[in-house]
Image (tube, rainbow, N blue to C red; front, side, top):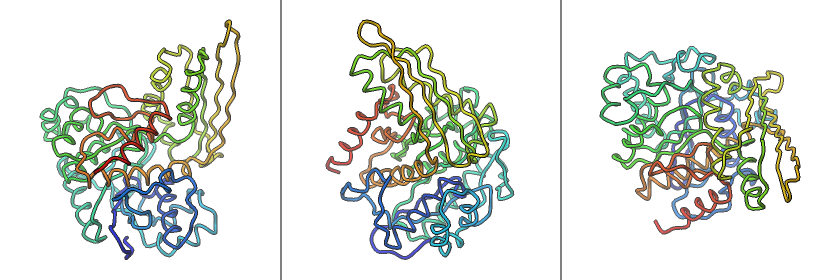
Amino acid sequence: MSVAMSGRRLGVAIVGVGGAVATTAIAGIEAIRRGSNARDGLPLANVAVPGLVPYGDMVFGGWDLNGQDLHAAAAEHGVLTPVQLDEAQGSMAAMKPWPAVGSGEFCRNIDGANKYEAEGHRAAVRKIRADLQRFRQDSGAEGVVVINLASTERWPEDVEAFFSLDAFERAMDDNHPAIGPAMLYAYAAIEEGVGYGNFTPSLAADIPALAEFARQRNVPVAGKDGKTGQTFMKTVLAPAFRDRALHVDGWFSTNILGNRDGLALKDPSSLQSKLNTKGDVLAGILGYPVEDHLVDIRYYRPRGDDKEAWDNIDVSGFMGQRMQIKVNFLCKDSVLAAPLALEIARVLDLAQQRGDGGAQDQLGVFFKAPQTRDGRPPEHGFPAQQRNLMDWLSRDS
């Protein structure tokens, strides 16, 4: 799954490599490698920082419960145009996912035959680490990161094992049922010494035990839940309302989407994980709770990857006068998400080169529920998050 290139090579191992976001990202890099100058949607395309790997020097591998090759998977998702599919066929048809560690208990609506049936948590971690070691060797990558683009898992109950590394290690030995696949991939990546980015709402490296593990091993981690559409707009608009002293009385948000992510969210327990990452954004920015902040997400199969995010915002201005703002964002879910996943991978790799381990606060701009280094409440406002990222990129290594 590698292509000979000049310069430093970054291996990106993706959990859910056959999904719409991953196949869109890989096809985009293949287009760049063939000479495309299109860089729209890539936030760091015009940022020149020593050590930030060029897009064309990224190589890919990864796990998926669906074993079909990535070209066939991309055709099924329907994100890429026929011309884009044809151009990517030669390279993507040769890419096949590695057997994935999955769990029907954690993601009820998504399954497949390309599953590794591990005999316990430790065996699953050994398998994931062996895949990473083989990937590094076969691809010739100088650096490797893991990006989780898998379907949303259910939110497990809080258990004592999540709150300290010692307790988590014991739970691993006991095959505790609260430990899901996302945590196993995160644990394996940290143990292997490679950065981990969680683009999903699933609990992973953000639990205190694995955050402690990442600090101990000095491994960069970031997450969670990629900020692509509706929440992105929220974090752009809310700081402006705050700074103009417009009081937000209510904010009703609804989403419809029909891709595999939407199918996973048909399960109420997976849906709750998604809602958990979207709910705290406004209060963190505005400085007060919005009592009528409602979020509704629905799977609507005909829409496919063309997501619609509709917002009704009620605000009060001078002398208590009421006003409304309507936002209707018709977007392509994977087209927004794929470039962010690529940038997260590049920044995690740069953090590894700089020896900057633990939670990467500067990557908060890409997430709905950013993980912070010291556990403090995250910054949610987009302008402040963007400054944090640019300040970190520009600092001396």
